Image (cartoon, rainbow, N blue to C red; front, side, top):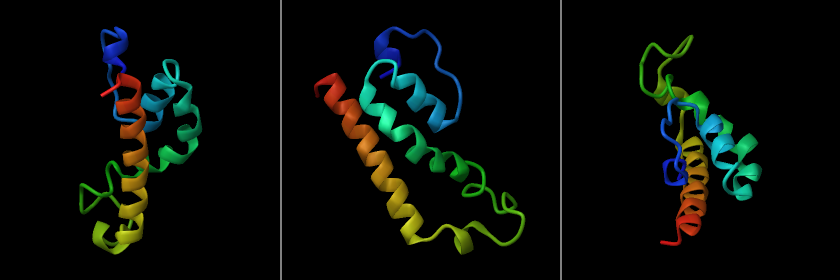
Length: 86
């Protein structure tokens, strides 16, 4: 969506920052900024066994966390689809 709006270079891994950027093009992202920031906390710990101070990702990130993350992503993707009129 950001590239669609003629931005030349989109860098970064922060979902919150990308949603902030996207909110410049569609204000529906404004309401997601605070909610979606939880996804940034999943970036390292869910991918690397030593990404947590103690334990392993499977002990911390459970089905409930996954379902919550999925709902946030689903909402975000739907906004993008609506914006692009697919």
